[in-house]
Amino acid sequence: MKPSKGGYKSHLIYSVGIIIITFLRQAVCLENGLARTPPMGWLSWERFRCNTDCENDPDNCVSEQLFQTMSDLMITDGYAAVGYEYVNIDDCWLEKFRAPNGKLVPDRKRFSSGMKALSDYIHSRGLKIGIYEDFGNFTCAGYPGIIGHQYSDAKQFAEWNVDYVKLDGCYSLPQDMDAGYSEFERILNSTGKPMIYSCSWPVYQIYAGIQPNFTAIRTHCNLWRNFDDIQDSWASVESIIDYYGNNQDIIAPNAGPGHWNDPDMLIIGNFGLSYEQAKTQFAIWSILAAPLLMSVDLRTIRPEFKEILQNRKIIAVDQDVFGIQGRRIYKHKGIEIWSRPIAPLYQTYYSYAIAFLNRRTDGTPSDVAVTLKELGLISNTGYRVEDLYENVDYEILYPTTKIKVKVNPSGVVMLKAEVQTNRINQLLVKKLDFFSALN
Ligand SMILES: *[C@@H]1O[C@H](CO)[C@@H](O)[C@H](O)[C@H]1NC(C)=O
Ligand SMILES: *[C@@H]1O[C@H](CO)[C@@H](O)[C@H](O)[C@H]1NC(C)=O
Ligand SMILES: *[C@@H]1O[C@H](CO)[C@@H](O)[C@H](O)[C@H]1NC(C)=O
Image (cartoon, rainbow, N blue to C red; front, top):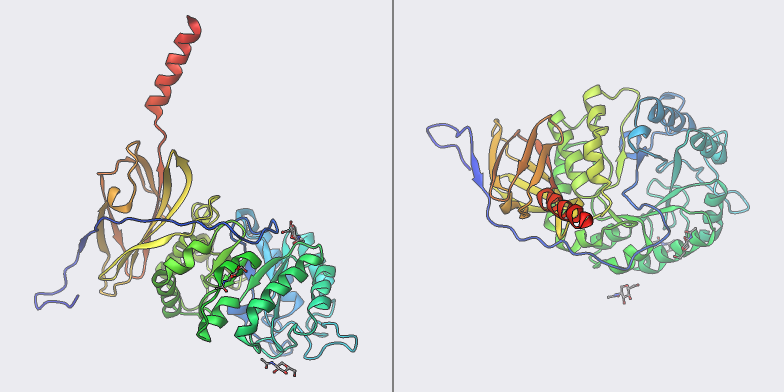
């Protein structure tokens, strides 16, 4: 909308058309008992990249100290208490060459105690360890890939007591991935050590113009990347939000307990996102049932960003038991509404997490007004509606109630609408039971 000569309209009221949503579920999937809800933890890549210069930058280089420090902070600063569990190493942990016996060698200087010692350290804190490798000849940063060594590498991960393997796709052919990624799942399984398996299989195929076989992907992977690596900017977060919204009919149905779409790391608390934008990333990621992998310096994160990452109500949305990925149900003039069915379920009526997102840049909060019915919330028993960021309780609202929210530019308002069970009917039934018991 262009500003008229008379100036900007300060409050825009959007009325939302009737939306019919179907949340399709799929049946076949990887059943290794892991990732029943999206994995939560910390991952080095976005914040620390491939910084190998421990001589000049000892506090920020990819080294065992970095992962030990982050493990400690995950406990002492309350992240583990709200569900963050995995401490994940990304690229650049290896020596450039394998040992003469073909084994992978962690960098001798930066991981001088060895990978088993780091794994023991992380486990001793009650946390779990993730590691990074690549399906091709090399990792993306040029370290040895697994090709030709799949069995011995998987065995080595199992011996190190690794809990999570991210397998990237650089230096390989996307047309080999259907066979290669599924083969490595079987090899990981054959070690007997349960390991979450994170794949980059679809994203490389999409870039090569191949339509990924999501039936196969969700049969072999616990999570997988669909789109670009996240960068430290709002533009990057927006591009991911758009990709997931524009392609939701293909992407969303593949998610469920044990198998998740991965829109990449949380960059909350770094340099690129404002406070509002950070709240938006967390809200939309939870609607998407995304893995919550923080990539931030936990030593220096500001308290307001830490508070976002530790918002228990929004984490509960992300970790919802049904594991149904949410969708963008409205997009018009820079206003979006995203919705995710969650527990509890009453008869056939879900509860919902609803995110109102303002992509406008015209400098003042936008009002959005909508009835619950228009959001697809149609149970006559009503919904208890609360704001998940602000301390606002709307109490019980009904399908015809109009709800009005004020959404900041590049910000979000996130609500939970919990379907009410029909208490009056239940009381009546109990009373009748009581009287029939007397007779
Ligand atoms: C990987 O290395 C092998 C052996 O050198 C080579 O034949 C193959 O083309 C390489 N693959 C890619 C995708 O570069
Ligand atoms: C291996 O696969 C079987 C069959 O899907 C599953 O029951 C088992 O938990 C898997 N084991 C590991 C270690 O992943
Ligand atoms: C996709 O993968 C499934 C399971 O591996 C397989 O049965 C199916 O034939 C594949 N579909 C295509 C189009 O290749």
